[in-house]
Image (tube, rainbow, N blue to C red):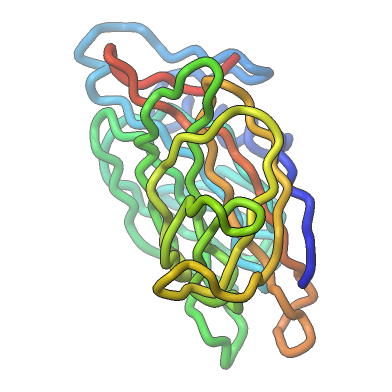
Length: 267
């Protein structure tokens, strides 16, 4: 059994470039970073057409990538494990191309992504690109629909993005409390409410009684009034895999639903 520390993925410099280019080139709205979000407040109608999107590079054997939207490069040299902050975009359908950084001929994804009005989404670049890999590369979308937790509680879900990890149950230490049941690759558990503070979680091979052998343990530190996605990425065993990308869990803050709409996690 291996134990891994869990860390909060901080905003990397490339996300500012993506936000600026998308905001200017696609919709003309603005997104400020460093903990403060600002969206163009032109009219209520415009706000009703806004979608919010967070992106994560979770393909363990993919190189750093460039991202093209409508044939324009909006993101360059994005490394594995990088997570963006939320981007404010006009709802609609966009053609998205993902290619190896600096090599536009090596395309790993070319397709359309549709964002619904007032949706809040985490979009994961998932699976593998190597010849003969057991999973295929694809973009997987997850709705960020966490209920707003109380000030002394947190909302938590697990997203399974580790290609060689089995279907898992997630429990607290010792298996006393089941937080998620039967989560398979590229799927996500429902949000659950847990007390704020430090917790040790156990990822177990899924069984009917949630008492399977522990695959790995994860230490988490959760703040009150905050929602999180704990994203399991990388390989549990790199010996027989196409890349030496070790398993880790990325903890990212999610938007929450409130009585007045959507609260984004900007402090």
